[in-house]
Length: 293
Ligand SMILES: Cc1cc2nc3c(=O)[nH]c(=O)nc-3n(C[C@H](O)[C@H](O)[C@H](O)COP(=O)(O)OP(=O)(O)OC[C@H]3O[C@@H](n4cnc5c(N)ncnc54)[C@H](O)[C@@H]3O)c2cc1C
Image 1 (tube, rainbow, N blue to C red):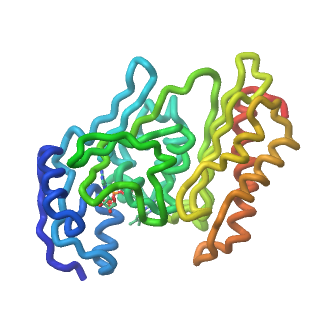
Image 2: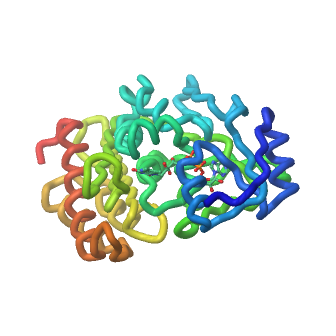
């Protein structure tokens, strides 16, 4: 049962920051509430002061800049991203992740910032944003700072956020040249299930489409936090992709995981699926770029 709490609905970011600063560990940010309210109902957390971001319009903006960068406000909903023409045409892997998160009811409430700040190892938007080299803008009493997503997740349910800090935006830098990316969610059911393994892959190739100039592999639900499989990524750099090489890369990516056994799958199964889906993701990306493997 929900314990009593004081509810705030500030209209300005500064006021939300001031409230958080006042209440510190007794205060909690509420975005879509699809994670927070479940934890509050179960009693696993019981904030005395809940600060909603719902009325702060600046957190709901979504902008693409002429220089190719993109900024997504922390309170843009997963549903808005699912139907964003920009994501559908130019950033398909993030669109794929959003369209596989929860149900349409959940997607209409859940926010991108909430998905990251909740810091579940299985968060669907984390692997694609990791391979997109995203960073988060954070405001707090000491002003604003930017943190690369690779440093943001520090453990299951934990981020580098201090008690009085708020994520305001998610930044995606411009990606130059020819590239392709995908997100593959493996779950027990297609709808309404958390990822058993989440794999995002992004590859860049040279102008003549002969070699892979950069490979990025983001993994979810196979370690305490979502992370980049950096050893595997390095194998592909500067190489001509072949089926043998992709097999080698996917085995190393699987070796880099530290999965647990839980109700969804055993650790061994998660390692196996990582290997299979990293390979599938790479094959898909290179095929779409016109490579004959
Ligand atoms: C039925 C169901 C199905 C689900 N399925 C999936 C799924 O398939 N994949 C998946 O990844 N997730 C899933 N989820 C989890 C959840 O919907 C997502 O993680 C969602 O994106 C959380 O966003 P929210 O806005 O609801 O966060 P909230 O619940 O409002 O907040 C989550 C946490 O982040 C903090 N927070 C939120 N925004 C900020 C901010 N801007 N700055 C600082 N702290 C902040 C809150 O204080 C809280 O601790 C599911 C949840 C439910 C209930």
